[in-house]
Amino acid sequence: MSLLRFDSTTNDWVIFAPSRARRPDEFRGACPKPTVESPGKVCPFCPGNEHLTPPEIFRVPAWGLPKPTDWRVRVIPNRFPALRIEEPIDGSTDGSPIFRHRGGCGAHEVIIESPDHDVFLAQQPVEQIEALLRTMQERHNDLLRDPRFQMIVLFKNHGEGAGTSLRHPHCQLIATPVVPRLLRTKLGIAVDYYDMTGHCLYCVLRNDELEASQRVVVQNSDYAAFLPYASHVPFETWILPLSHHASFGDVERSKLRPLAEILKSVLQKLSAGLDNPDYNLTINTVPRGDEDKNYFLWHIEILPRLTTPAGFELGSGMSINTVLPEEAAAYLRNVDVA
Image 1: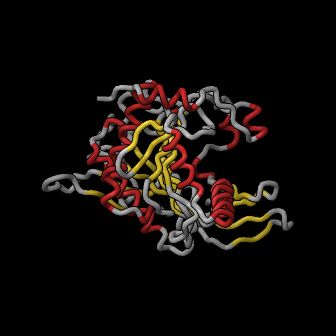
Image 2: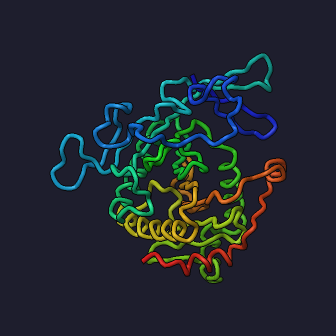
């Protein structure tokens, strides 16, 4: 059973998902990194092993005339979900108004990026990345049809240091019944800026970065990728559209191909320039009901896991970045991925 508990000191909700973890006494000696994949281990995400996963939610068929097990992208429920569709959404308290909780209602899905076990996203053809992006958009829009869900968080963990537990390349999404605090904060700042200026903060940021040019890594006719002026981690990279949409779900299908092209280029440069680093990727978008608002611009954030946050960062919430984004961007621009 999953549930959410409210942290009154941060005005944020914490998800408790006991089914995803071990018993408390089993955390002893858990500091060493776990092995992601043992030799000879059967991969449940590989073709032919579909029976090892929960029932399929969605698939993109293979090119040509598909056989029953042929697919390009496949979506399944997470076997150990953080939130569950079956859980109640109602809230209550545990003896004090401070101890608020609510049911762990939500959704947690795994998007298997391709049938290829050892081909990472940066190595995939553009057509496959486009199919993945279309699938992510399809699942985003489908889950928002459920009025219980307020936010769809689309993300990818690449590598053991980024939190992945299976080598086979995959993304995930979690639909939440609340808007998480970090997202509320970012959205609130964007709303305040729009109210004061009449402009989208992220559009202004994008335009100013393009004008400055020194942190831009790559650009095409529809998207720009750059390292933000105030990057929180080394080689943090954002991909922003050149046309305005608040929601990833509203992006025209014709714009997903150039998105796939620039995403592949960025990931190739990071992989070749930094020796295939672990990274987290998120698609930042608006919550339910704000799809038609002008205060926000959906975008992709890629956070390489090159350093480990220590006591100061965790205690203060302030980042320490050891690489200036101008220097990092110049390095990535010169990485040859041809």
